[in-house]
Image 1 (tube, one colour):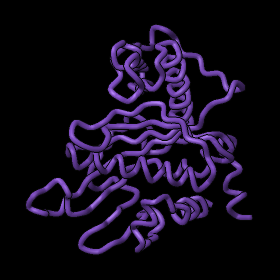
Image 2 (cartoon, one colour):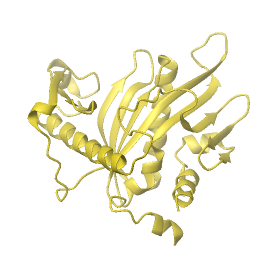
Image 3 (spheres, helix red, strand yellow):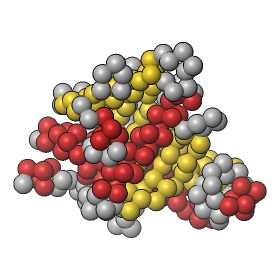
Length: 254
């Protein structure tokens, strides 16, 4: 009952738009971002949530630079909203021939997918729209034409992009939907006077600002620093079993 009460926010029942961005560190950080991407897709699968990838920027050698997907299912945003923040990985790098331990960072941002009842007006002069060639899978048509769309909201610096569809018009519509959802969440957070900006955060994606640490070596432990909860089965967590953290954060905010 307590958890159901914690999911009573006005946006909690909505679908969630989840974005993952690799921090500094090149291939190592990009591999970590891809691990997080898989973790959330597996969580969604466990919850019978449908996932739709909106944007995927692959790394040069491995992993991803960034990814955005929509998780569609009951209370997807309510569950995932607490995942916003910096996630830290400590492990012996598979990309280091000397088998040294590395620390990597990635950021996660979550916003509610808006329905038609919520109207967000965006002035045309406040946005810049860029087209570029898709770098992801999508067939020859996607890769040969500049069908991918990037929309930048100039007053806030918030960016949304989509490159998964072959139609430039469709990519633009999806990117605009993502942008409106991010602007809505940005304003909600701003009104609540929370310290952490959700998008275009001034915080460096680095040590000291993480909400959760995933340690693979020298010991195994995933620890959420907000609720001081540690779980030793790292593989289970990375396979999508993050409910203890999600529920712990929801209940702690009571």
